[in-house]
Length: 96
Image 1 (spheres, rainbow, N blue to C red):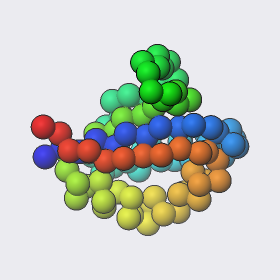
Image 2: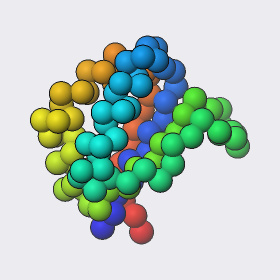
Image 3: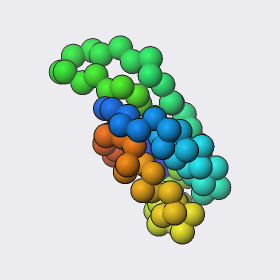
Image 4: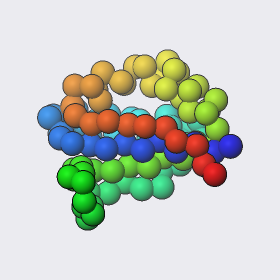
């Protein structure tokens, strides 16, 4: 069953590190079957005070592939770039 990682970016604190992270993360995620469905800063708030700077939605074939990706040595080698460059949250949801 497919799973979807939904990422909300509130603030980029170091644009240079964030660009480095993003350029390195995409091929890693794709190597584990991750597929970017949404990556946008064009957001229209509909209520409730939710107004992120950026939203990403990444589909993985299943939770096992998702876990393998984020526990991989390749991802662990770049995760500090993400931690040092942005403020945001993420969740994982299952498909119907």
